[in-house]
Image (cartoon, rainbow, N blue to C red; front, top):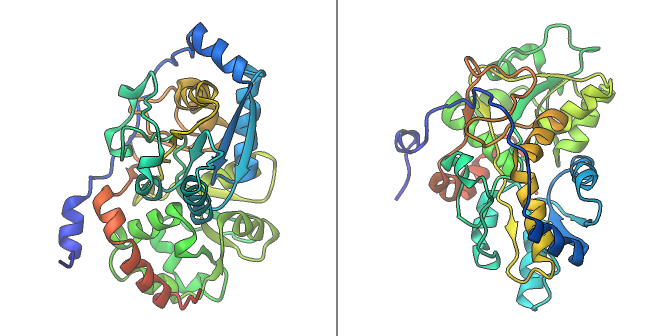
Length: 342
């Protein structure tokens, strides 16, 4: 049965905000878990996260737990799932932890994951969870970025990205099927900004990029001036002094809670649990918020992201049913609208 826009809107949660911030809870793992993780000595992490972001997380974790070596294997979203499925089918899945930005793809292989929940499970927003086995270790969010050396009148909202003044390749876009992060954003655009938003935005003839990493570099180099981007690829570059700035648009901030868990076949299950417990703890979420510019799926976080005002800025994440069922037909329509061919 075809889902109309009216029915889709009715099935989606209203825009919400996190906060207010509260005092951080210390992360004190049980001695037995620490000792067991120390004996295992390593954890094998499969992740779709940008390498520069994940390496920073690993470095912070190892300041607390230097006795656990994190062996990091990176692949893009679809490639990672294909690898996991192939290894699992042959009985040779190497991963202890599978860390994925697309909850839908993680949910589709739910049988590969072990039962797991963190000590602070009750602190997380139910809307961020699609399975009791999968948890939002990170919650990237979308904003609008630009090069301030080029753009003197930057966009102030999502609708500004449809302005004729920014036409002619000034705007860059990540292709729709790059992964769950981009799918979340384009779903937000159609549902919240209007069914004609894609057509209006595509009329500016944006340049298309395979992922956010090369697009953010293109903004910094001035190859494009403006781009919707995940803030965790923008914020660290801005902190380092690169010519890039960003805003949280007032119409809403699409967020992308991860779907991460422990493999049933994990050879280092205690080190895996220590890793996930830490990532999901206040300590791990502070690192994500402070150092990477992510949001968090905690109901009341230990801090707020820089520039985020809970009284004004609203977060958006789709209901999981339409997130899955609309994926293929809407992406096909997006490709046609933006004249993208695989």
